[in-house]
Image (cartoon, rainbow, N blue to C red):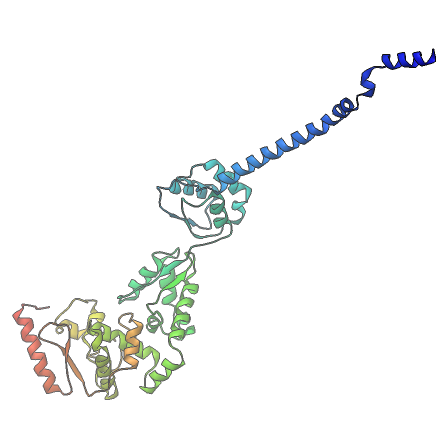
Length: 371
């Protein structure tokens, strides 16, 4: 009897009390749900981050556009800058550009300067370039110029500084003296080498660059060579400037330099035609005489003995070396050859020189050249 009751109670016992697998499934589903949610959120976040990275790192502009320069002054606003960049590079997403600019706080650190930007740069790269002041240097170089005004225009044209700022400094006798020059000889300091400077460089910083270059060229060896021939670096520069104006034939430079050094040593007037052209401002004159000879200027080497007070052009460094290594000879006179080859006929005495001069004057007359 008791056994049958136990047997019947087993039969009536609900089956779910013995179903452990069901209990396990019932209690495990919340964990799986949370795991699934977390995984889904992670994927969404990764996708969003990937999309954001794509927007920030892809080329910001249209590839058809060329690179441009952004110029920032003390008064440039971040909004004006963003407008310029958007227009110049044809930014695909101007709103994103402004958002990133605000995010990195560009407006707090707008550094004046010149920045080269490209449509292939990313928005992030553009903003970092400007924020951290990664300026693009300006390359300065010049050649074949004569006057200080030409130099000033050449140097200031690609820079923020005005011509007046540099002109004022070069006319300041006290400042020029602090560098070891006069307002005339300061031109000797400018060697036609290439320099890299920032767009917003100050006049004094710019001149310091050229001063460093000058002293680097005039090292101990070159200074000693100048002393050996009885000249200072400034005097070498002045002679080199006359040599370059006398001839376009570099193979003559050593001979021409030697000629003028000979005349200086003998106390003779240089009588260098190019100095008359410089004094008058008439650089195209082919016949020297008349009013040119009468010019009352310290650059008139027919009227005043010795070297002029400053160079009559900005000579090449190779010409300076040609003066230092000039050819020893007895020449005291020179005249353009009658064949108009550009070379000169040299002479050690006046009689020989006059024969050369008459031949050249005859050639000018035959060609009808009067000036």
